[in-house]
Image 1 (spheres, rainbow, N blue to C red):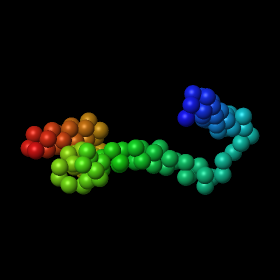
Image 2 (spheres, rainbow, N blue to C red):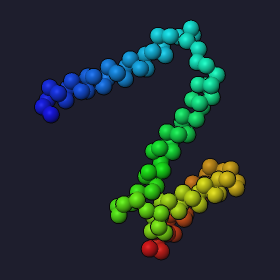
Image 3 (cartoon, rainbow, N blue to C red):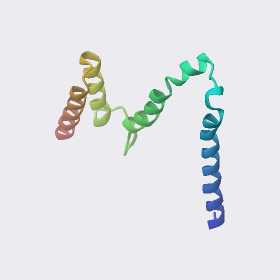
Image 4 (cartoon, rainbow, N blue to C red):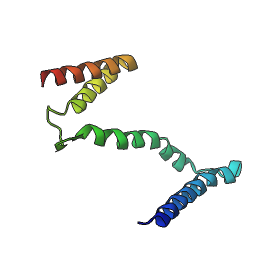
Length: 107
């Protein structure tokens, strides 16, 4: 790709981004989403978070791994277990970091 193609791609992506975001602003209050779409959109943040976090937890320098050597995966599982048990955010972070540190020191 030459410089002109790169700039055209950047401008095109910017235009598409602006148009798709502006559609909701242009419609304003006249645009009402059906209840089913509103229910589905409630899960969008959790799905996006899972889409970002899960690949990061499962991927290691050696590739895709669920082995004990994948410290981040097991630390996050311990943090999740603590959260489901106590529902405390600070404890979840502390447990996850403690397990992560202990696994790294043991390795």
